Length: 288
Image (cartoon, rainbow, N blue to C red; front, side, top):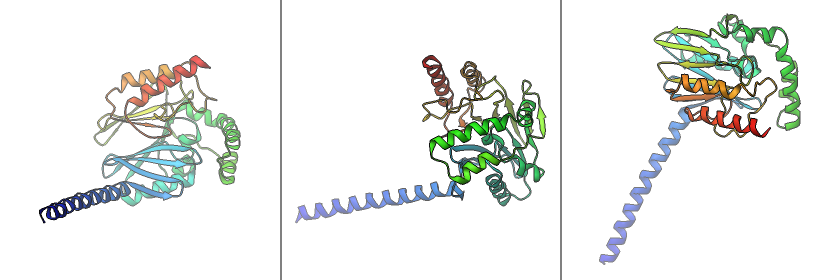
């Protein structure tokens, strides 16, 4: 009888542990779901810290933008999704959270994953900050040469839909309208935050910038920075391969206290992404 009683007690204990596990797992799943917003089939927003959101657009490659709510009235939007429609959805989501928010956009380069939604933003009178060099690369048509090369890569990959291929072929681009000298960079005081836009030198493109939120210690590295999953530098048609690792080294020294680092593509992390990018590029340059 004692043995039966002990077995029953053990089973009850296991059931309680199992029940607690299920409750914890369920709560975690609900929390994960609450932290992710699906705006469309190819557009996702994920909160990585209170008021800090990574916007991911798959068109077809995964491209990241950053939204930081700095107060009830101030929002900084870094880079846009690939096109105007996805950008419109993100802006409408921002306004659904706070209709009176002042939104400013920062472009970190001239590629379509940096400013593909500028046309929509400008139509909404949202100021778009970018370097004079970025504006020049749009106005002199360099962007369209890059888009033609990207279209060829898409065709070879076999991953792109016909809609995506057509968009890469026909999309028109607007330059930023709040310009600054790329070598001087830019500092914006937004609420209590200092937002610094910094150019360390040529990298993935001749005009790639990074954006650092000093108080929140968030670095948007954009296409200059590779995710830990990345094994190759990606598209290099506009890159300065020799200077790229040196530029990332400068970013690492300048923002060594960054707690969150967001790459242009792939998963976010910390400053390990910067060291990984340097090592990847040095190894690539040595063997190619």
